Length: 205
Image (cartoon, rainbow, N blue to C red; front, side, top):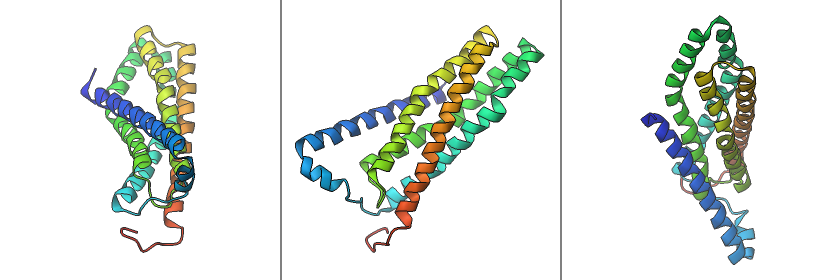
């Protein structure tokens, strides 16, 4: 397994751990201090350059993922079926070359997940915590569905092209693309909430 892929998997593992920890912390806080928890839910985070930077980075990476998801769905993955008609040598050459070059492009997806979960710990100014949780939830769903696409690609490279396996690749990536689109739209809502509300003259606003 390549170092890049190990790094990507490590990012996803860290993301899931941080998400679980944030969820446990939230539930524990509600149990221990239900009144203060309800009050703090409406309290915005302090405006800082760090949270502003994380928010903008999250938006940029969200739309990178949207482009990557739908680009694969409509342009890249259909080539598998086209090359299978040419012959197994062309099909395998494309598949191995694609996976070789894909690794580096996965890293921004891992960074995206880490950025959004970090905003649960460093709440951005005037951005609803529910919005951030919704984005993190969609990231968790992306992590959950990705193995279906990955295993489909591995199976086709090992056993040859199969219509049923190719269909699994296409529907799993379609789900990922929809999830990415949801993340992208929610990220724009977060930015709108941050910068179109009444300005506050606090530090870093």
